[in-house]
Amino acid sequence: MRLFVSEGAPGNLPVLAAAGRARGRAELLISTVGPEECMVPFLTRPKVPVLQLDSGNYLFSTSSICRRQNL
Image 1 (spheres, rainbow, N blue to C red):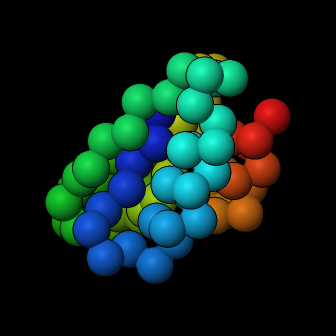
Image 2 (cartoon, rainbow, N blue to C red):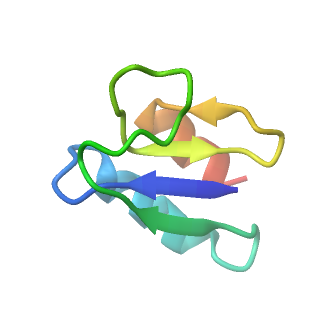
């Protein structure tokens, strides 16, 4: 899985805390991106934080990302 965050984005703190708790249980790559960088090809505006699953699907909801990382 790959987690995209950006400095100052409102949902970063909870997802980074969940990522810290999930260390060792799941392989997670954390990438810091610029505020205007588009990580998801089908979105016209950037949205972070976003979790890219191994299947290629994306999660955009902060609470969904936190739940997924705690599995």
